[in-house]
Length: 336
Image (cartoon, one colour):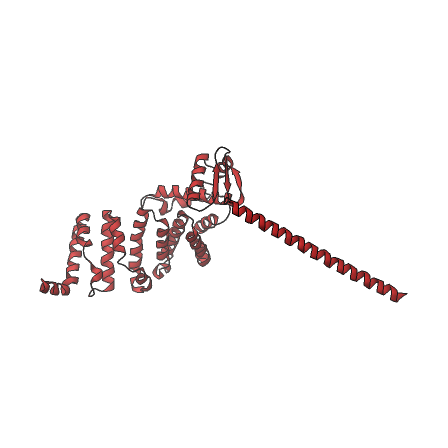
């Protein structure tokens, strides 16, 4: 047993290649389950004799087959075997980097990890080979922006939005509709739905069922993100407002407005309290007893500081007036 294991080490690469050939034959026959089962057990990441590129291609094939089989958990496990830092830093692996992130996008979409999907498109976008081809960087930048705006608008998403607006200002001019959408969603201005550029956005592949299913769901999610953006704008300008007025401003039903406000509060994006009997919503953090006392103490301190300042200014004016009067009297005495 020990001897056979010793010789097996020297033929592990050849065995892995034969297993890959068998899996590809099964795949060609349409037997995806069998192909994935055959290939997924090969631990090529431990093969020291296999070249880095071949090893990465092998793992990508494993990921592709298990994804086609619908085994998303195993795909996530296999994906950990590839170092993203290696893909980012090795110029010879740029094509494999794009393949890797393309497969991860399928996984992220299935798991509902929108921001991770956005960052995958960002990684594709900054790849040098993609930057050299206008059609490719335009497509990846468009997807990057759309998935960024579909993700919950937390601090990380805000930072990414600011970065792309600053660093890619020149390239954004090439895609004016997407640049305008990004600008609209990051400024404190109410947006109307449907959006003025709806036709262009809806025709984009992100909101179609090819290459990734769920286009209608993503379009509905964009509508929700626009509504949530508008609620954040209202929260910035109002401390208390009637729910009927909120629904009118958002052009949605009262129940939907209440539901979206509740979700934003639960996600800690805004501070609000809905008073159903009164039909109002209060925005802003509710002050506790100590907060009110601290606020009162700060106001009193501010008032006393201002009184002290006024007293000082009055005293200064008196001194200036007295000095002028004394000077005038001295001049009059000298004149006489």
